[in-house]
Image: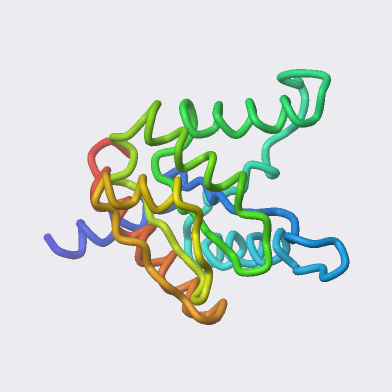
Length: 173
């Protein structure tokens, strides 16, 4: 019986749709931080652990476009993936990166799909001071954010979050 459960878990983790949301660009162009690369490394790690559909918004095609203006296109693309594709979300706030976008995505989920928070995780790099709006959502929704100090710890926290997402959505996947 337990073997059947674990086989089912393995099959489901290959089907669960995890959207990784985080900053793609550094806070300052004179001090470049490998923001997008770190998110891609996280995605690759989760894929290697069997989460085939762990994706960044950038992994989805830009055709057809949501709008001819890049800023509008990327905003609407992100919102569409949150509303219509994701089973679970992993928000990643990185030190030295412009986290305004991921904060806006967190606020969007709060207003448009708050029930998705039960299938989400918030990962904060240590020494990062999130915005008041971000902290407000976390406090009001009683969401625990997990701190990490290095990418290996970030990866393990995300892996645990993905297992939780599968567990909480087991019969819907």
